Length: 290
Ligand code: RRO
Image (tube, rainbow, N blue to C red; front, side, top):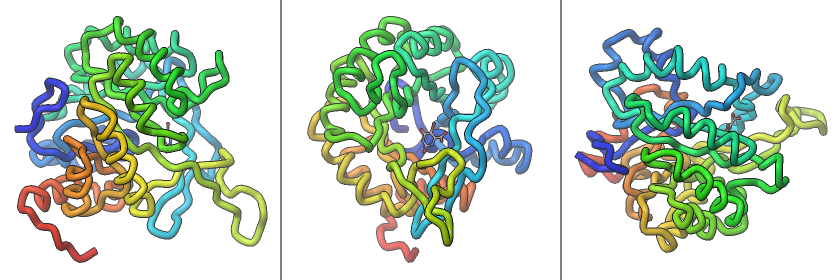
């Protein structure tokens, strides 16, 4: 058993937010999926206070060794999450981490307060990869902004707060240290790297949302560098992710300072990747042919 912020995990592999829809998987694969659930904890996709449609298509672009997305946070909003998704997600055989995003400190506070007393929620992950509409600063890219957010929401819950850091910042170590100073229980990183796709044969952006975020093996070595930088700056646990495909990749992320790893893009290719990577990691398989 592994311990992460008081949650007991069967192994060290969880999912990256938004990269595995457990409720859709249940519908497609049936209850059998619960017997061999691929992750040791389940991180929900990001929810916001109000429902959102998300970005216009196209939303995805397959790049060399990676994926660029501009999904734009489609979700049914907090009320529908509490009423419909949370009871279903509680049936999963692993702890639930609910991921939330708001564009002001007050909005994030409302989301945190609404989850604070739910015994179905094991921890809350704060997605800070968005601008603060009140200050104009990118919340997760600015240490002062990030510490102020944590100081505002920390008193609202006793549940563990995990801060999902953005790699699109000058100094990810300073951002992690600010999150810790504000009272975060853990940090998770990296979210996607800002990226732009040009329409084939044209000069305009391909994705309906304009820019997107790059994930997958293309970013793994950036993620390793950022996790090791963060590990030098904080004492709280780190959830490391970015391009992990094999047990060896996971091992390298743990060696860089992560306590737990998350699998994101690889789960789109293979929904059972979490189970495979956890087994490879536990078997100590370090040389795996790609
Ligand atoms: O929904 C998205 O487009 C999205 C989000 Br909220 C995020 O945090 N990271 C990402 O790559 N896409």
